[in-house]
Each structure stands twice: as structure tokens, then as C-alpha cells.
Length: 247
Image (tube, rainbow, N blue to C red; front, side, top):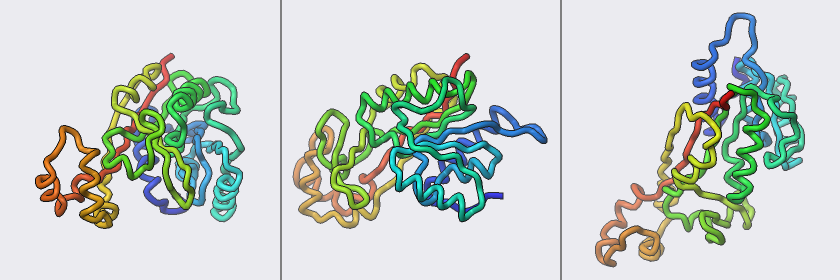
């Protein structure tokens, strides 16, 4: 029985669970195995859904307060979540410890070299033939200035959740494919979420400034005429990978 309906972070969990069960149908009386969530803190931890599906649920996070929120959730729901302080760039577990690894909207706050390191670490702690779900923010996002100032290629620093210096790293399809080149790609998805609220709050003056972020260039008058249709342009795009570690 699922203990709670999570927010939008439940969607990738269900997608990953569907793939796991398709690849390894659970026999009666058996357990799905041991799963690690990298970035597992927060008030509604996705680990709860994995635990409800029968997994031995483990998670790491660098933030003590976020881990406490997840632990509090587990106590309130009466479920067992194995949580510890840990960095996905140096995962505190032995090689081949887990049957599955999950990551969503945590790795995006690392710079690009550290992202590559985290991906290698997740590969290391996964058993051969183990399954993984990883997400990357796509360079197809627009406008990128919503994420702040680009201080290195694809690395944007801006505001989020009341914090003023938050990093979001973006990857092209080719960059992301290279990051997971050691894995077998079972499925690859690109998810687009249109940012209608941000579009609605954008003034005509601000819209005209965004002409600098368009490809191919636009004439001023033509760009001004696009203003009533701006909601179709504001988008937040993720690349999702469903992966298997080769033998």
C-alpha cells in the first residue's frame, strides 16, 4: 500500500518502477532488492514509494536538515527508510551494493565535472545488470536566463527556493549520451513542461529583451507580434535515462 500521494516527484518514480518490473518481474514471496536514492532528503521522499513497492530503501543526501525531513516523514508514516549523510560524488558504499539506483533533481545542482564523477559513482555501487534512473536538465530549456547567469558553459547560477546562489547545469543530448556511455540505455525520454506562469508574468519589455536568447535572430517587429503566444516558448526540459549496468 502506497503511504502517501507525492507531488510531481512521484512521476519519474512510477516510470522507473514500471521499467524495473518489466525487466525483473517479482516472483511471489521474493523481494525487488536494494535501491539507493542519491539526493534522498526532503519532506516527501520518493524513497517512500520504493519502500512501499517492497524495496529495501536506502538514501544519501549532503544536507542534514533535508535528511531530517525525510526521516520525520518515515516516522510519521511508519515506514523504514535507511538514510545517511553522503555525497553522490563519493558514495559511501562498496562496489556492487545495490540492485537499483535512482536520481532525480539533485545531480542538476552539480557542475559538469562533478556530474560526470557522480554518474561514475552510481555505476560503481550498482550490481552488474542492475538498473538506474538518471535525469539531466536539457539545453532545450528556454529562456535560460530564468536559471540565472551562465558562469561556465551550460552552468547557470540564480535564485531558487529563497536561495540566491543555486547552480543548475544543462546538457545537450550529445553531452548526456556521453555521460552514460558506460551503461546500456534501455530507454531515453525527453520531458517538456511549459512554464505558463512564468510566461504570464513576463512583461512586453522583458519579452523584447529575450530576443537575444532566440536562435537565428528575429526582427523586432516580428518578435513583438509573438508576445501573445509566448506561453508556447517558455519550457523546462529534462532528459531521462533508464539504464542497465553491463556485466
